[in-house]
Length: 106
Image (cartoon, rainbow, N blue to C red; front, side):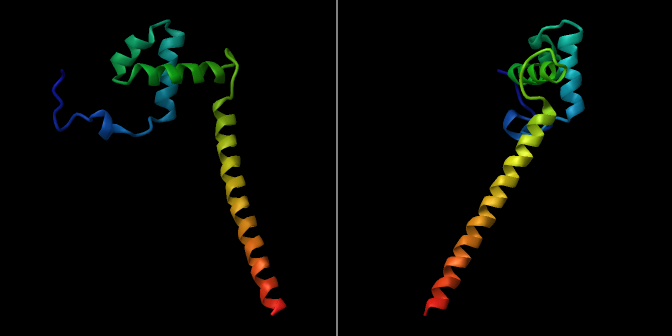
């Protein structure tokens, strides 16, 4: 079992997103240099599965595999957020109208 010192981030403390460039470059090491995911992950200090996800997404972005590109995923996330906001606004307006209709009937 490896010893974790205070200056080494543990998986629980590390929980940050990696920069896009880092993810792209790490995936490129696997794809372009024909290296294994496990080898590159060990070298970079990332989890194999995480790097595997980056490789899969990079292949989609390059058009080598079917799926949603990074840009399409970002757009979908943005649109879902917008739909949620608009739905909340609509529901609030419905409740407001219902309230005012009741008040006018009195």
